Length: 634
Image: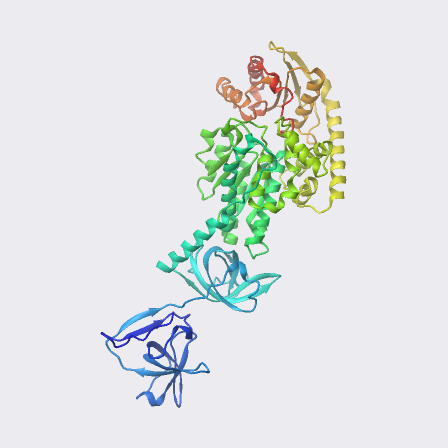
């Protein structure tokens, strides 16, 4: 700001102490300034009043002598047309000092494309600090985006070691292009404090809240059951967008099946598009988003231990914040709680979007958001893929055209019998996807998920689902090949297993089929025990046309399928754990599909008790043919 001349009027004179970043625009003729001698010549001394404001005090204006480094008070007597400044040393003993800050023309981090080669000022929050073999890279976030700023002390040495993540800073530097990305080469960096810092934080917070707002999009189909979940999905979209703007990484854990991938792939594409828009660093997508499949339909301790270890390593190595955990198509049950308790020791928010039967009292103390149709008296017919397509569109609407077929694939993968399935299939057909081909896409997704195991298989899965892919012919040919191969391998598996299926008729008149998938099916190949059981179940449902329950079991596990029988598998699991002492029973799933684990020595007692409970279950024609046949558990 420009200083006004009020020295000597009505009190002691005012001597201005300029901020180092002050320019000639911040000074006025006739004012007194604190100065430092920076050079001595025959005809006078040169003085600095800031890092960029200097001038000459002619020898005729003072008596005695000065040396480099001497401090003195000077009066600015003239600002010449050529920009030179003239000063006179003054002798004042009793004066008031008034600090002067620079009125910065602050640039926007997101608008630096036209500033290459120019010197700019930035104000923002430090969201990441990465030490390289050369400079220190400070990632600075303001109202418009995030930009990397490189400060060099010496090779591999931390520049500005006093700066920490979440500090509000002011940077002066030159905008340069490095590897086709913008970067600011730091000339000066100051940590702001007090009112200055609070003013910047307030400005950033207000802008961040506005930019985090999700887009208002019309659902792909009109469906009241899903519509009541949209406010919860909007809240999650807002939290995800804000997380990106804060440069906090997002780690997605999803069930490794068709619905899980139909949920996670659209969200991944939407968030990566948003990251590209808001971050200049071309590596930001890789650092800020990772999708990780989970073989079990819950968050296992093995998975959380890996995730936490990688997160802490990234924090130490790359200066990242700890991530947000986004659980898709899993995360709603008591089985997830031990993993959540592990994360509770760290600053890791948890958000869940799922359609498995939940244990809200167990889960919700640990999660920041929980979206589940059961919380609205709906059920698994609203699949996670259906919900997440709407979530992705709220984050980044332009991807809508790529996603119109995905809810139908998700519903067919999980055998949803919701009334809205007709609308979803018709929507996909309008985009050129016939229903038989949509089923093939689901089969191909399950097949690839089996062989990928813990690998996300990003590019391959994108080609199979035709999201984020650019080769329609390859997509068609790939799906047809994978689906045909999967069906052939299912047939081979069932040729071996079907002769060993045991049958009995329950008192309710439902059919009960049992098969030892450990000893009477091929191991370590496709299909896994869960899908093998589901395929056997589907054949028996088609063969009998009656209510059917199928149990596929091994030494310490059982996979359960029900059709036309009103089971509550999560409740049965809870009862088994209490009634079979020493059984070590755990598990869960939907009302009519699930899996349980137990100790091998108690298998017979666990299965016998389970069958007794199933025999008491009521038949329900409304549940006929609504089994979620593709839920798998290895």
